[in-house]
Length: 112
Length: 291
Image (cartoon, rainbow over all chains, first blue to last red; front, side):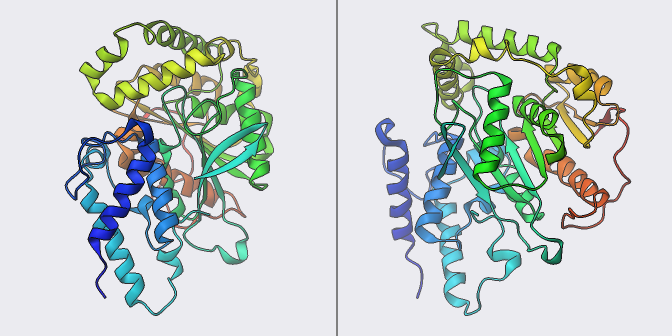
């Protein structure tokens, strides 16, 4: 069954609103919204987002792994859509795999 | 986000599990990452070296210093010894009892050194980015910087000026720094820190790595490192500034990870996963250049 990307987007939008709290977020969050250039999310907020996503989707979704390869400019321009795709791909992989996650991929970088 | 009670404070901690079980060799080596003062948080490590270190086989521990990020902000207690006490209490609370690798960004490297001076038996290696050991010369500079920030940031147009010049995020970081300086004794406490004698710093037995941006004023302190720790590895990255870690994480990674592998192979009982190093053991402190 294909993963519902719109549902993931709504989930991420909800988390972002919760993190920003009173500071709020202007406008609608879409696939094209950039975490830093548009939302001006501070790096410590990105860590909070990663933690909440892990809590919501489990170890299959590894946000630290997604951002670890990015330099400052790429991180600044990272779009919500890229994260939605990352989560959808991880969930689809977890769904099709009948094997338990192997050690080389499944546990690296997951919260201890 | 997880919170641990240590040294009377609620401390924000993030941990990453090592990629591979090291089997018969026992528990994975621990890497503890310490961030810098006033504008910094554990995010600088989380978004740069934390995951690569976990992939290399380390149990990775990051935390927000007192007064910073999501850790509690007490009004008092911001001398070097307080930060070292916090680190020791945190390790005990997390049940990290074995040897540790300490990585420090900016003042975080100074805290790492301060910890190693007081607990030399615990520290396998120190890798510091844009940092210096706790010497009088470094603390004089820290005091000047803190004074400057504490005087400038509360001014009416300071944040607007920073926003116009360096953007909204820089302005928000500056506001955080302003609040830390205004509501705590940091500006007073840190310069008044009790410093270890130079003999005790020089007696540090573990390998140390110091990475500097070529355009950062911090590189002027490399001579202090070479003088006190003649066996230290010093690497300068040309064209980079104090924000080296977040500006060029790939470069920092390519310097720190191979060095940690070399340290691991030189220390029986604490192997680090990864291919063999291309060069030899730790080199003397003649400043090298990367990239």
